[in-house]
Length: 339
Ligand code: PPS
Image (tube, rainbow, N blue to C red; front, side, top):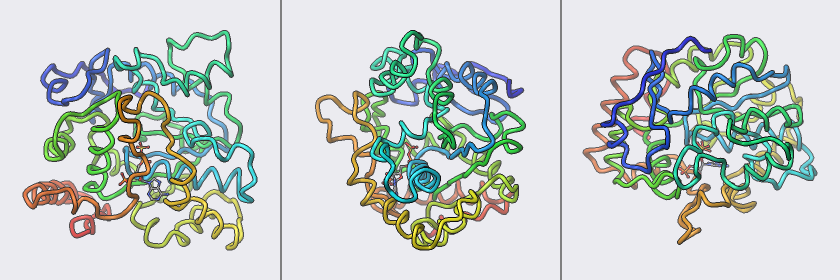
């Protein structure tokens, strides 16, 4: 539906990924070469029949770049500026459904079906409907407006009129911190169990051999849209260093007209420590069964944790990769080399 072509990824790509294989293998979506579980094309096609609403806000990211934080900020601005919403303590993924989630369930530990908490949500909304054709589009349909929709798919896979209809907030982050966060997460979750060190994970990211890759076309396509009135581009690092300034910009972009006082309250409510204290978002069998504490979603929430994880060699490799990919763009990410 997006005009892309799909090809099966090679056995070698599957093997190199060093994690629990997806039941339907992997596909490359061309021309960019997005690497996704084999069920992705079906679900991407379904997105093209979702009826978006004028007041929808999509939080779009490459994974581990600050999605959940931004979902919480946008949802709180739209639904909970007085911090009195009865559903505010529900995990973010229940209040802000992920339009790119269905493909991830295609693993043996989940038997190709959604994790328990998502299945429960679906069954409560649609007691007579089967879940075997994906659930997220239906859950989104039943979500109360203004909807905050999470999305890891890039802008090029979305319906062409997306920005004519809805607002998109895009977040990115130093790819070295994204890689660190992604590696820690995929190594610890039961459904993926990445079995390798950070060097092998980072090389997969750099060679576009990890699901969701390639990183650069995802970010660059978003950067190209940064002046569109319905598109707002944010760096995780700016959100960390001057949260109020970024919240003011989001307030303006969303048209929420919240006072400085309310923004300050929202800033505190969405801080790392506040969000962490309200509980981990993933509470079912995506956790390692033998040690539920081994999966930590709200892990550190800082800038520069790559320094605690990268060898000097890996830093050099990734810096070269960053430089190479910044050569043909004015994307402002060269600070990532030092930070
Ligand atoms: S996901 O799974 O792709 O949706 O993950 P995502 O939410 O994009 O990224 C997870 C990282 O974001 C950190 N995080 C935060 N940082 C600062 N402030 C707040 N409030 C916050 N909430 C989440 C989270 O800790 C992950 O980063 P790391 O570096 O692993 O700590």
